Image (cartoon, rainbow, N blue to C red; front, side):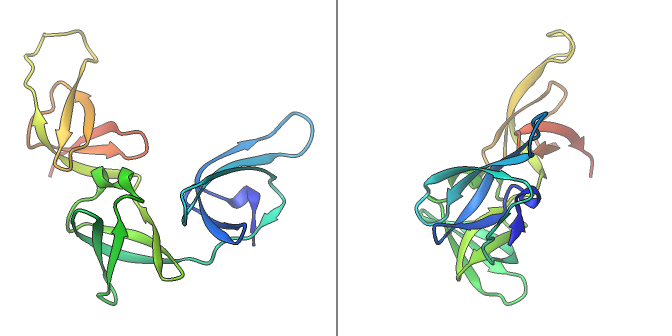
Length: 187
């Protein structure tokens, strides 16, 4: 059991006998009355969405999940392929169930996989990731006013708006929740 006030994005809860992954959570504290957690969850099994409003002191049943640190190997037409760093077990994750993860996965990098009853139900993408700029247009200094940005494409195909001084083959840090440029990375 977990208190509704302790639920975070990425938590797994049991509702109607099946696991739901918390995709959004918001706390609301009215001037009068009890604080509540507004939770939006996605079913692991069928993809249906469920929204709940729960008092923060109330307990809900959490799904017992395992977290495994796994290296991303490659993707084929239907699946992402991972290897467990401890046991060397192979895990396949359906691309159709996780299409939004494709632009953040880089071969050889390690990600945490959430496993429930032997099935991978989520890939945890780090909050910030370093990407290499694969495509970038060159702009001449003085073309625009200060604060101007341009779109670039990373090696995974992610499009990000960056300052004009960023060039092809440079490394940048990107916030994966907002797809926003954070800073240039010098290695």
